[in-house]
Image (cartoon, rainbow, N blue to C red; front, top):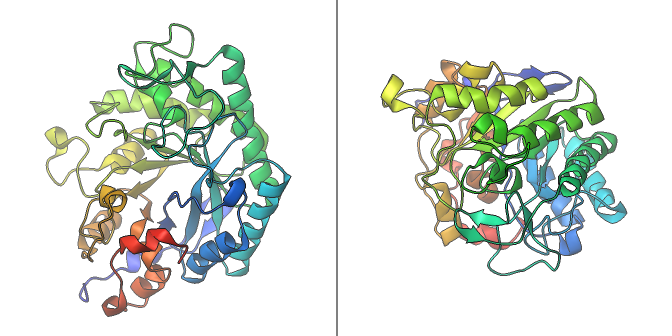
Amino acid sequence: MSSIDTNVLFRPLTIKSLTLKNRIVMAPMTRAFSPGGVPTPANAAYYQRRAAGQVGLILSEGTVVDRPASRNDPNIPFFHGEAALAGWKGVIDAVHGAGGRMGPQLWHTGSARSTEWEPEAPVESPSGLNAPGAPRGVAMSDSDIADTIAAFAKAAADAKRLGFDTVEIHGAHGYLIDQFFWSGTNLRTDQYGGATIQQRSRFAREIVAAVRKAVGPDFPIILRVSQWKQQDLSVRLAETPAAMTDWLLPLVEAGVDVLHCSQRRFWEPEFPEIDGENGLNCAGWAKKLTGATTISVGSVGLDGDVLNAFSGKGSGIMSLDRLVERMERDEFDLIAVGRALISDPDWTAKIQGKHYDSLKGFDAASLAELV
């Protein structure tokens, strides 16, 4: 890696009221170290270390909005209630104290279940399904939907009030918002269902519009999306660029500034049948089709697939040449780094200083504590 010029990763970027010193984003990663849903000083120190390590933008682990059964583990943090919000105030103050910028990822897990914990409240989803043909929980009523939209907007307003720099809405990976996108889990016949991805995106559009109203015109809104689902890695919501436009462009028009396009390996082309094996990835196509700022993500700097993290495996270090090449051609605007930052808080600073010999690979043992 010593011959790679990584200066392209360290260009500043301004998105409305947010100015970033570089293009590296800490990806949201569920850690489940918030007892009773309340972030602690240990959580604040965990994020502060990454800010001190020169990460341009930190996105928090998923933190849930004020809905029954919105989380699927008792140690996932809330983003509502006096105690939890006070904990998050400690987090953002610590990050700002280290010169960082940060946004919370607002989340509702829907019917995506944890195998170790079952919430007491009824699980809610578009059609009472966790996957095609896999019933779980109840279908949301109109009032459930309205209250959920309001809960996202309230959480976003609280994020701005607490001093966060941006907010990310989690619309990926088979969780609630993504379950509305997915035809296999959204069988509704009302205005929140439909035969097309554009029709099934109404729930997400209304969340985005409500969040935009709550935070005003200059506060950046990020939306995380993915083709794949944890319930089925082969799922594709948009099989063509036209379908991707129908899905994503209305969301940008509703108020999204940044599309955070999750894929398991950032170097894989989204539509190789159109532009070949070195073609645009998901974030590249999203930028081309919508004009939005985009974040790419997926196994950055590591030689193992992201899902290895959840099977207890580690990953070695991979060259950044493919990333640099794509960033130099402005395929996407920002790159999110996940597991490398779990094991090595100083990963960004080491890349900037070209201290490649001191880089650490991902060690699955790091998942057992807040390093």
